[in-house]
Length: 374
Image (cartoon, rainbow, N blue to C red):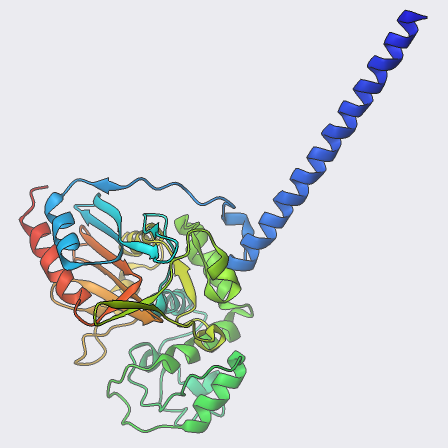
């Protein structure tokens, strides 16, 4: 009898263990699927992306560069490369002032208008694949566009279309609604004259989606993020402020910081609604320079200024750096590399400070890099 009871008890314990194991597996599976849905929500394609953010070590191999950033009062994350080797990757100041959370290499920043470089890359990829031509008139894709037979896609890419554009407000709007507004407001400058205007790239996003028959987010996931291995990327209108590594954007005035309200990111669709960390942007830059995304001809097109402004397609071709810049709600972004593709300076700041010019800071840092031995 004792043996029988023992066998019964052991059997019950075994069954309990089996049920607990099955329950845990089900919970883990639910958690995994939930995480996958979250990733797909951000990227449009979960197959290329990890649900865990990679741990990025702080690198500080050049104390001169570090000293310049500290002395300037820079707040954010810097990533600096000399001869294709990272010499500085470090956070400065606080990502969240109230909670005293520091900026680190993992900190996430809305990249603002530097996103336009990814849209320009996408359009040039489609040109390279003969799915469109940057010399196509816009009325080929948007028949009702004003001056549509004269304005070419390349004019939108170089901000030389002459369009009035549209004013951004707090309402939620679709891409089609924004295109209607842009068309309604018409033209106000001669074709070929330069004026930076978000609406130029709003039009290009519409063309991208018309030609590919998919959202620009899905296109980027498949043709840019996947091939380059970029994992830490998403869209601010999803749930950016709930992400653990998200920074808060601030305005600094009279030595006081104030957190800035977020815009309605539906109105920045494809032109300023993405977030990254500095390492992800560096991965994009390297892939671009190494011709993993565009061939030599199209890369040269991208960097060729379309006017006296030095602006090509998504980048300014300045004497020291090929660079793009962005600003939105306290976040200030500068992403640049030398013409030979060996040195990179990425400054992602979450404090808009009128006393601090990232362009001037780039010059100081580049001067040190040029004097540093390989």
